[in-house]
Image 1: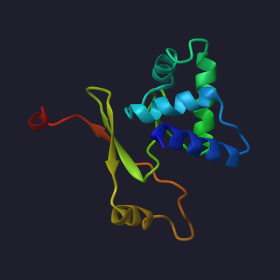
Image 2: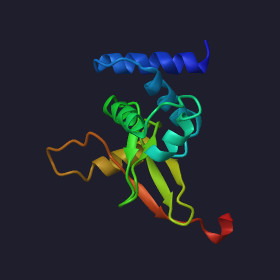
Image 3: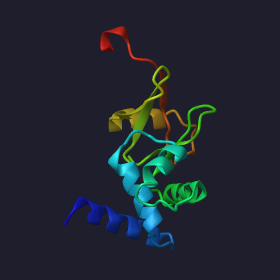
Length: 143
């Protein structure tokens, strides 16, 4: 079975669990996010979807992204006042936002780091999710 079929089936199941159906638009938007994991904005997703769905509107792309976020298939990531970016990586992870290039990188968080972070919560509280964003730029040695 191809990855596309598996992805499509997983998408259909996740949407069905939320009482929604998999539409061609939702499938194309989701596959675009999975294909190039560079945390695109809705405008960037729109530009990537257009060749496959020439009649799609930006509003439809926004609606598809919103649905994918609500169904826990995609994470919405916000950096200050910039546009929302979309991330299909659902494993617990942090983000590094390169302020020079504007690129965003996923950073795996070891379970012990997440436990440590959760341990600082006020007594009697449990976090549903944790968002850690590092901001900065590449060091000279990296260039």
